Length: 194
Image 1 (cartoon, rainbow, N blue to C red):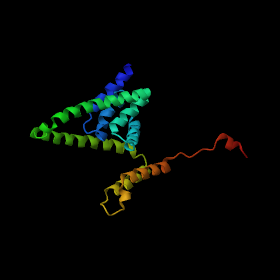
Image 2 (cartoon, rainbow, N blue to C red):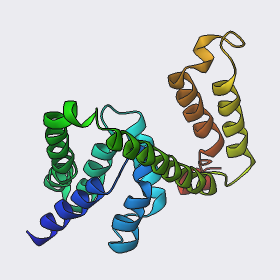
Image 3 (cartoon, helix red, strand yellow):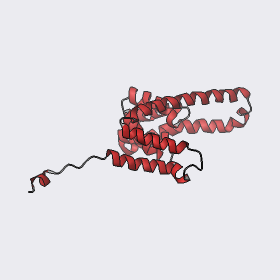
Image 4 (cartoon, rainbow, N blue to C red):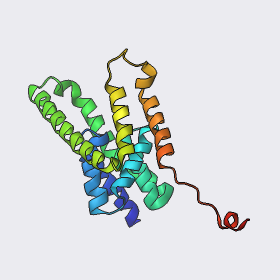
């Protein structure tokens, strides 16, 4: 029971202190799940993020489900997900009740501007960490450059299909499969056959 409460509490903290969600929450994930608890490492987190990018739902919800499942199976996944969702749902409900009044207050608008700046800084920090972990060889750099160039080219310079995030992710997956697949070694029985 203590481990389930630990999962709930850890993901509640991730949810409460992750402003901006998505990639902006990686510093909090790193502090809470990697450094403090040692439940995952950064490579695993990046793998979970990759899977979360191609599955429906929010990255944080998917991440909590994956880590919870890794720690304590299906029930752990459910408890970690509830820990992540509950604070956000509560805060959103409260904000929705008062948002019409708050949106007109100039101080609140200024505070949101400051929060957006902080979220940008957190995302930049995450991008730098991702770059360090991804560029392990020239093949990775080549895939990155091609995807980046295709994604930033102005409309009309390449067919729309080539700029589609779906196409770019699928093509990158195929490139990864081609570049990084392990060579099959002959089995012992194959070696013994004349």
